[in-house]
Length: 303
Image (cartoon, rainbow, N blue to C red; front, side):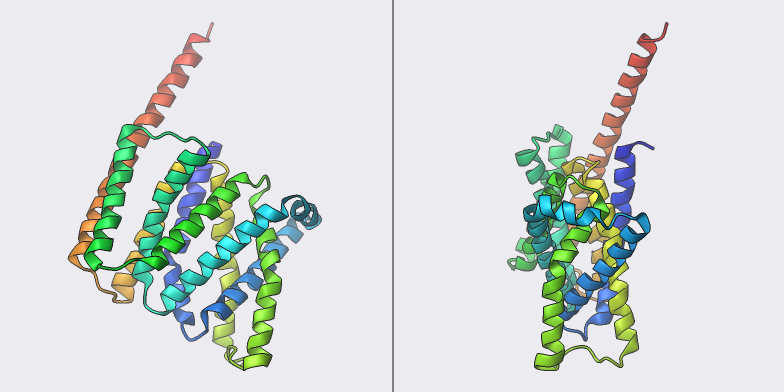
């Protein structure tokens, strides 16, 4: 398996974990979103620290942060905003809008790829992007709302992916640096909750604290996979593969949480899946063409 295929496999797995995460965060609806975010940050740091310790790479972290502190700081800020909005949307019954945000994200990723990396799409792929955009627009207009949460999720995650593309470091080191920079803020917020307001999670609620601890590996795993994928797969491909995530999120919202599914949702999903079919078909044709070209070169070079 080559690097591109490994990157795509990592992206699929990451999206599956993200897509099913509403089931997890709904179990923490009784805990304040910023408190969940703080625990999520700290337990992620613990998880990453253990990974680096096992790999005997902890010493690399200080040098990495010294040379990349601005980019890592920007990435940390963007991902913390994204995490916080997502947790809040699940807790207050807006999982459907969160899924809309991750449907919009691929369009943002395609735009960023075209602007910053000069990535080009075949006409059929542009048609796929257009159909997906029409689906999102139909849903937005049909529901008569400005999806601020959805747009914020899409933009912050798109910019996060863009920055990750520019950070010359492995996935584990990179994300560990992000949560390490966020850790003082998380600790400060938890101290204020416990001693300043008295509104922190019940210390005797073992189940809640086990769930909060589990948010570490649940966060770290897909982020490592995402970082791995962004360094091996085109930004436009990353964006369109991301549809796996909101599809699963939507199913959680509609089937498990019972959020409404209207005719506008049906229209949007029809357009989006048509777009995916077009994109996948074009990708298969391009891959076959590359294989034929490689075979032809290999044959012509044979004595």
